[in-house]
Image (cartoon, rainbow, N blue to C red; front, side, top):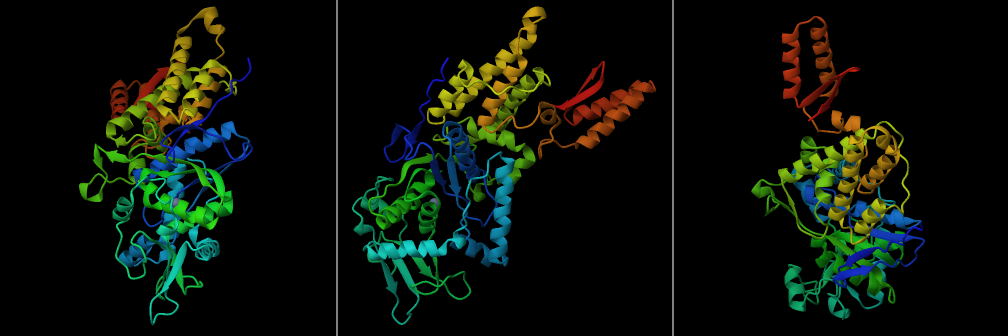
Length: 482
Ligand SMILES: [Zn+2]
């Protein structure tokens, strides 16, 4: 059977509908996603785009021969400056430490590294050149305060772009209200936004035609996406909260600096994350960092809990959702264990199970349907394992295992072997360490040998209290968590 062609459909915020994805160059798909501003640990709301766009990246890599995924690091920003002022920690130390923590979190969540991860501070000349192009073309202007020669602001002139607001579809009044515009003497129009601002000597700054200063946030993404992906590329992603003003302003800068170019053709936005039905906030006490959560559950469980909800829907984070994710993954790992220690065979992509799974994912990343397809496949394995005699002998468990692993890996889960999973080697998944458990089991075995069954029972109870299940078999005692 020939492999059925798979058509990727993605919801495009520009058109407000699911469109068939047609890359500029089918041999090389290019995607940009706004990365973290590195001043604090990532919270679970920050984790959502990391996971969603990782799934999209994995899918694109499956469908196209080459994919370039760029995710930036914003390491110059007023929030970073404010954090340094508050804590006294030098800016360079905050950004370095936070970037490293972000990488550790992303890894724990099973996210592949992007192909390029440019830092804003290493791309200032590119930003300056783009700002110069905007001034040249009449889309931006510099304001030099009187008597402060060299302390220049550069602003993007929103009225110079008749199509401004196309992505967010805001009216001009909404644009002005939404931008929380401060009345500033350097603005010609209240909707104009900053491309460059002056820095006092104690603040990070770079020499520019407008004096020593630093870039605004929006220009970073325009300059860095162009450098690595070109002036027109395929997909731009980020959270819903970035549509306005950040992404609207990126479009304004990039298309006005490069007339005739489209910039990103497809805009993909993930929905908000709530905690127990409420907006996450430090004052409500429902604010969790990824690190906090990793103490409670393995990264794979956190990741899977995020994927159970479609990426465009609001995601309600609850302990129950986490428990449910854990139990589904447990079940899948049990199915893997039932297949035995056989080497999994890479699946033929045209088999029905894989086709149904890929059809779900290519339908605007319908992860809940994709999970349902994996569940069906796990059911099949449980059913096959219950067979006996000749019918069981006819089952090809390595093929079944290969398919299950293929589907799980496309979602970025089932990354460890079943034994390691149930022993909970992943970070933070249990209270007792593996060595401690092994030692207790050894003590219990010794007690049994010495026929001290009371002590053996006491040790078993102690293990159960630590969430460990023992199975005594002919080859000795095996154990797992849960
Ligand atoms: Zn951005």
